[in-house]
Length: 135
Image 1 (cartoon, rainbow, N blue to C red):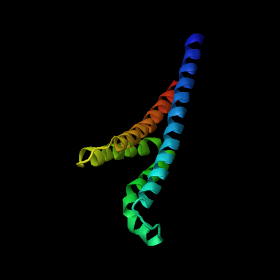
Image 2 (tube, helix red, strand yellow):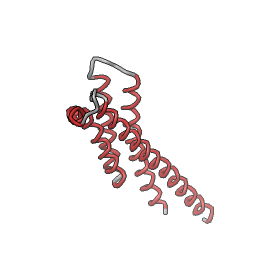
Image 3 (tube, helix red, strand yellow):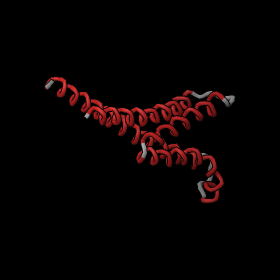
C-alpha cells in the first residue's frame, strides 16, 4: 500500500513538472513570436518610418496582435487559450501556405510552431487535471 501511494505521488510530481515545462515554454515562446512578428508586420511595409506610413500599414499586423491577445488569454485560461491558439495556428497554416500561391518554409515553420505551442497549453492543462485526480 505504501509503495503504490509513493508511486502515485511520484507520478503526480512528474506530471506537474512536465505541465510546468510545457506551460512556460509555450507562454514565453508565443509571447516572443507574437511581439517580434507583430513589430515586423507593423514596420515592414512602412518605407519612410513615419507615423502615417506605419498607421497605413497597421492592418498587416492585426493577425499578430490577435495572437498576442490570445497568448494572454492562454496565460490566464490554458484550455480555452490553447484551443483557440491551436485553431488560429491551423488556420494560418492553411491561409499562408496552402491557400496562397506561394509556399515559404519559414512561414510554414512559424505557423506550425504556433499550432504546436497552442497544443502545449492544452497538454499542460490536461496533465494538471490528471495530477489533481491522483492526489
